[in-house]
Image (cartoon, rainbow over all chains, first blue to last red):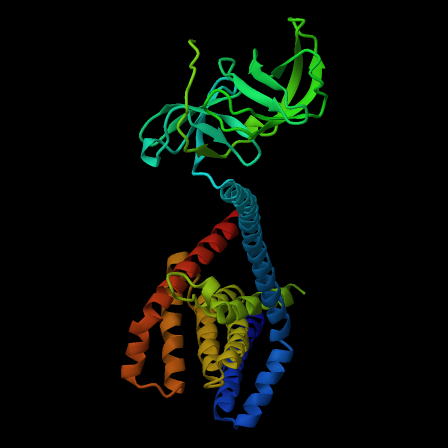
Length: 273
Length: 157
């Protein structure tokens, strides 16, 4: 009896399977043969019920993945734009500087050749630097070098494409200066290459804030080029001289483009080192 | 609840297969997740579950394609039923036979669908050569991985 029941159950189970399959197949065939409006309704029903949660999940995953990708792309774009802004700012500063220097060159009505600083003295002291113009550009030894702000130094050595500029900070360098207000002549020099002093005759009447220009003496620098301003007075070793600390108009730490005045020295006194 | 989650998982796979072709494609071919899913369920739960799942997923796939509404339902319910029947009635299948069965199911499904889509023999052969075989290989590879994972889990249990 039990065996019979088991056989019936197996048969029913098998029949349930074949019935399910036949039902599914019949439904499929009915759908295949159904009219287009009925198909459209069935499709709409499927999308709004069974497929809706799946669509939502896939849509969400895709949206998240797109957001992350977009975020990464924007981060890279942000860095690129920040770099571009930085470059543009540099270009703007350079443009302003070059515009100013160009104006200076035109104002002076003199024959200048412009060079960029390509190397500096590697020591801590700012004694010399190298610019990218040389003999091929008409540069010669002892030509004055300046910027739109004031004197920088003079050409100490020339090669075909480059020139060495001896700065005013070189202790071996001396410059004859003229105090603008009192017209007192003095000598600009330095001992340690950091502090520049102008030596004037005692009781010359020069004061803090007076400006110094080149005197034209010495044959290298023409008269009247701005040099610096007197910051204070210090006690002089020689009683007949006043020792004025001078701040240069052109800070040598910020030199990028320089002008070499193409003017041969009328006469030169070179000091022996 | 568990069955509903399984169905939802299957529908997500199907939707991904249909809508995210660029993401889920392997070597340019989109694996037939619905076939793997239906075959796996049929092997696990028998021919009734196989037939109904096949019908449900077939009709869902038809809804996306919409050209021959019902052709995929018929193909997948047939495949689901016979795979389940093979597991239940004929023998306890090992992994190699399951993979072989999946390969047969793939071609059977393709043949049924093509038949009801009014495709000729030439078009059927062309569809096989123009991507059907690659899709079959990718589907078989993924199915094999799935069956190996499931059988190793069953052995542990």
